[in-house]
Image 1: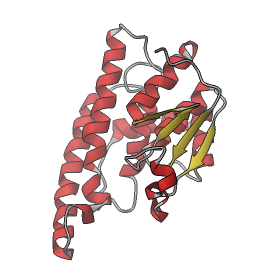
Image 2 (image 1 turned 30 degrees about the horizontal axis):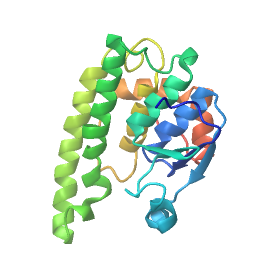
Image 3 (image 1 turned 45 degrees about the horizontal axis):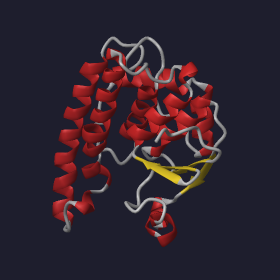
Image 4 (image 1 turned 120 degrees about the vertical axis):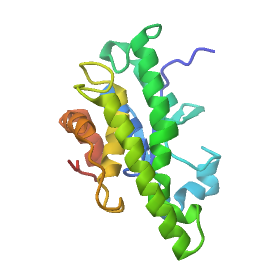
Length: 219
């Protein structure tokens, strides 16, 4: 079955979470859509109503008429393919598209996960001393993961080409996470990622997504 552009596009997101990448993608697409805030801090994602949308109780989720699509990588590729004229991702069948998928998979499976011991150590330990140890080891691991990403981005204007792509929207999320006060000092030094994030932050679509979520760019 071919997934046609739907009449209804509704994004379920949490402010400042990885769903920000999908929010940016929709703003970049120029498509008409609705955005619904699912406040994870109040447990809104665990309600029966939201679990009916996404049984995994996570964001983002994208409602397309009667179809629900989850996972950032899937959503970014779907949005880009709806508006190929905007060049939000390289064309299918090219090495550049494979590199884009490769990077997005790395962000989802490695970079995202590296923040978990920092932001949610109580999921990995139950005592105060255990939580402190998880955060300390997590901080070391996060620095290593981000330095690996730095080497990948070194010398580039954007993630995979000389022009913006939705890979940069996804990178932008993790740059912002690396600037959070909950990340132990010293914060990771990521000049290549920071330079790309600053370019991304200048885009009107990104500014609209940030404003909609009540966020600001942190250099």
